[in-house]
Length: 170
Length: 194
Image (cartoon, helix red, strand yellow):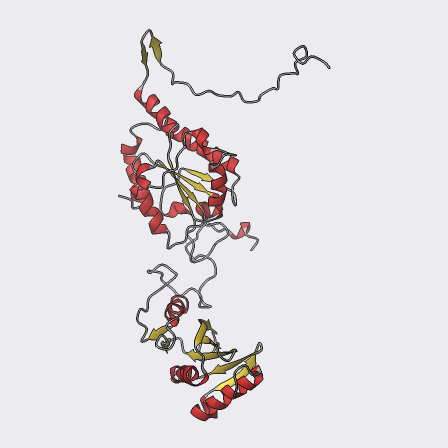
């Protein structure tokens, strides 16, 4: 297929290639907000991402961040935003894991830029990336006691004791 | 054309008289002047405070206009700002202090030599302001003792001048033994400083 084709064709090609390699049951896909979004089990996520980079030329990891959906069986997740500069094509890859086993494989071996993104995801969601060379907090202070972007973390500062509800209209 | 010399306008009435700094009260005669040491030292401290600006956000921008010609902090004996904590008397904390910054601020305060004063400028430094969240220190008085709080978001330079004049008042009237007192040691121990 020549470079710079229309996006729908590129999306279809990606689906076909992934089906060929991992089987149609190996992943699910849907179009969300005009971008093709793949969901893969976490055991296979590293293999899928390595395949996407090698075969479909997704040479750029735009972003990586955590997700938390309380109530689901697999509460925590990570989403990878991939960009193929050669083909002008963007996709998203999602993977989920449970709260008590909050671990995902690192992708720093594929894209070195994932180093800080995975540290940030650890910092805010508590997802441990196995194989990461330097898995520690990056933005919050090092002895921070919680993972603040999980949904069960209170929005307001819990150390504040001077907030009287009568003054805040509650 | 009328001659202005013949018709001077009414003298504008001043509500506050202009105060020219003068020496402390004492006894003087031919060739001598006697007063108490703490009055002289208080006057010297008052008129030569060296501020250390710890500016982390928008209050720092407001402070820059306070420093420069229009508001002119130099009128208060602060001709030179000190960017070394070891050479300054007044720590001016201006802006949001993140919890990760708190140990840095504490370290800067501990590096300052006695006597030292702290002015907290703006809502964020004084109470956390609108940033009621996990990453922001809810007021710098959780890590260091504060002498004067200036409210506002950000405060006008005039308000900060008012706060600085309060600091000057504290510096002038502080007893010379205060920094050696049990109360002062207890205050520092409260913040686990020393």
